[in-house]
Image (cartoon, rainbow over all chains, first blue to last red; front, side):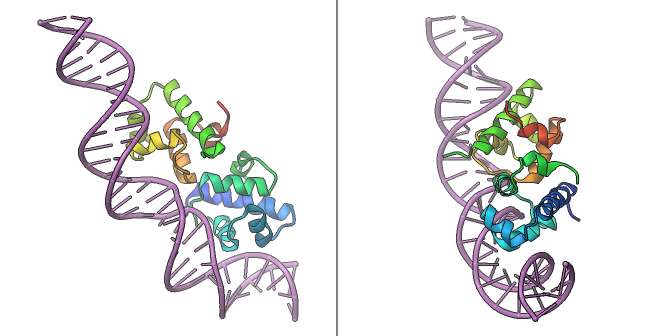
Length: 71
Length: 71
DNA sequence: CAAATGCCAACTATAGTATGTTGTCCGCGC
DNA sequence: GCGCGGACAACATACTATAGTTGGCATTTG
């Protein structure tokens, strides 16, 4: 059973990533995280840490708060 | 060198906790987290995960976003 | 078809837990 | 004033659980 907050976060990441025309691999480079990890985050498979949330937010040029909104 | 985002989060938790007159131990009970962990979070010693952020936010009766604001 | 994504197993790094000790502050009684 | 006990937070050490990484192959997508 996936945690709703992880689903919410993952959906926000995927939505913004696609809106910016980035592949998961491109985002992973920008965020300095592993390629497969981005996919796991979007699919709510991992309980991400705050520092990595910030990395992804910065890579998407948004604040973390933006990634905590419902999309 | 402590990460600024962890410091910011920790300060928000401490500020709201004290505003609500809770000890770290009381908050740890409410959040169902370890009693020493709350201190480590407030002192920016740990890189907290999203699910635990939600637990603390719920224990403090605020949204996670509230814990990401500067206090 | 090429690019993108998902899956897998195994590994490393660290988050989170657990127990006990130490230090500080405060209120109280002597 | 001093010593004590209680409450609280920080600290120390060690452990368990899981986050994050890796590289290759399979599957899906446009």
